[in-house]
Amino acid sequence: MINSNIEEDLVEQILFDEKPLVFIIRSALIPTQTTFLTPPEFKQQVGFVVYPAGGEIQRHVHRPLERHLIGTSEVLVLKKGSCLIDIYNDDRELVATRELNVGDIMLMVGGGHGFRMLEDTVFLEIKQGPYTGIDEKERF
Image 1 (cartoon, rainbow, N blue to C red):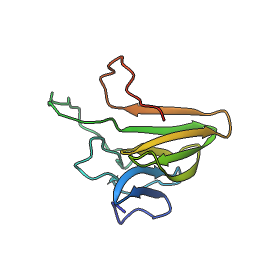
Image 2: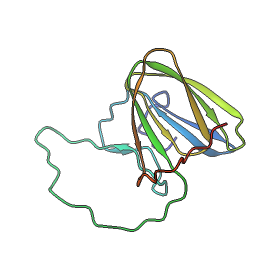
Image 3: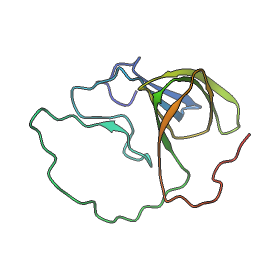
């Protein structure tokens, strides 16, 4: 577990040979303090930022930093429906299957994955850009 302030059953880290493949963040997780679930070296940072009523985020811009990334991580938020996620290691072997429901969040950082819809389903997908226009997926 990345952060000891988070209940184990609300964030599941699926590993293969100690390598993280997927984080599943259940919809019931509502932290009371700012909590990042990913380590600082991950190419995609996922966390909850908590502010009290009347709090403020000071206006700002983000400096143009050049980063070198290999691979694509993605975050999916299940907005409607339910599905099964199949999680694979780098050798395309099934490691785990989990059911996902509305509000659950998946951070995919390694291996492969596939989805089987149990109901009509809508995802919000967040991943790194820029979009290259070429097919970045290798299906198996």
